[in-house]
Length: 269
Image 1 (cartoon, rainbow, N blue to C red):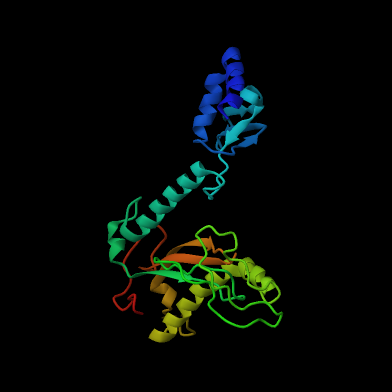
Image 2 (cartoon, rainbow, N blue to C red):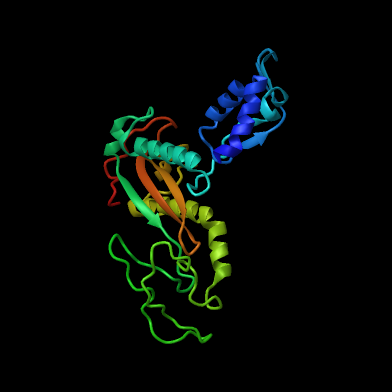
């Protein structure tokens, strides 16, 4: 790999553009697959219309502007995925314990870590390690309606390519899996909406407040609490998306403020 790069470096050293090339490489932070953009960028003062800065790729090494690919998968780009993981950790940590302009008092707010997973679309090859030794894969007997074994009964190694594959492709409801993945973000939103409705019903309030005919205001749950959350979508070996989320109860204050919820709003609720 180094032998492939050295001739290009020699050319840039010879024509005096190596420093500019190296500056671009440093800006993308070791990205494995930087995106090459061609064109120009103007930074314009909105108030005056003055062009404060003009960058044209034609004047840069190789005639391109390099930007990081931003891929979150370590197998595709270790550098960008590492940066994303670090940023995600900071966001989650700030939401749980404070930091990044979030007060540490949020650590005393009720919170839950939840996992929302997809239903079964048919048996697939699995390890079921559960933080211990791997178990037999689908220790079942008999055959499915298509004549294929209902069980596998092998102990799959960690990186077995069969993991996640259905035991019977005809029994497996692949169409339902595709629909699930397509609508998974919407289902998460529905879950949060339903949580508001269930809490409201439990304490005897409407979800949203409203003005009565006599001019008074009927308090709603959303006037009192806010469910703040961060979620991470993860693809399981079987190809189904599931979510890990951290949910926190706050008072229904203005964005950018983090007041504790009413005393009755607990994690048990």
